[in-house]
Length: 119
Image (cartoon, rainbow, N blue to C red; front, side, top):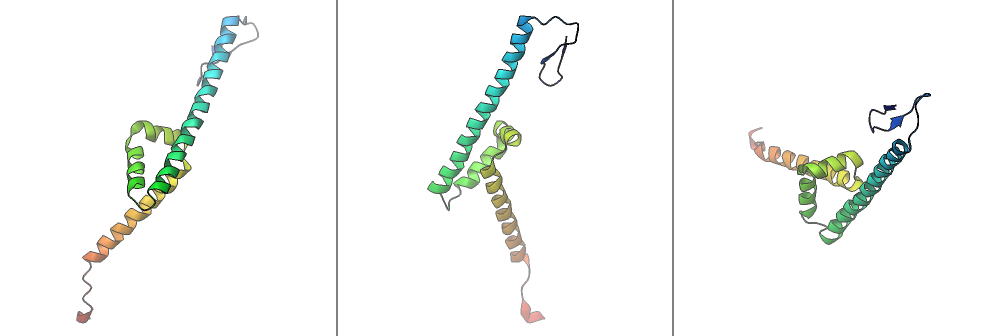
């Protein structure tokens, strides 16, 4: 009997005897994988709720910036978001990038000598 590369599920060939323990083990692996996806979906909903909560409680504050930064810096959170995604995280992160770019442009404008009398 061979096993699949990614999940180690059994692949029986024509002459293999199918043993109950092999079959049960395969079904257990599948169920564990499904439960893992269900847990990830539940965690994703909680993460979305966290963004909604912070957005309602701190609409103009820096708390969302702190939240996005912490999620980005935490390797477990970053891995989870990278694997399963989070619409609210991507939206806030995009806003943060626009905000940072705007601040960079403002700093550059402040460095320009705007003395128009010399022209």
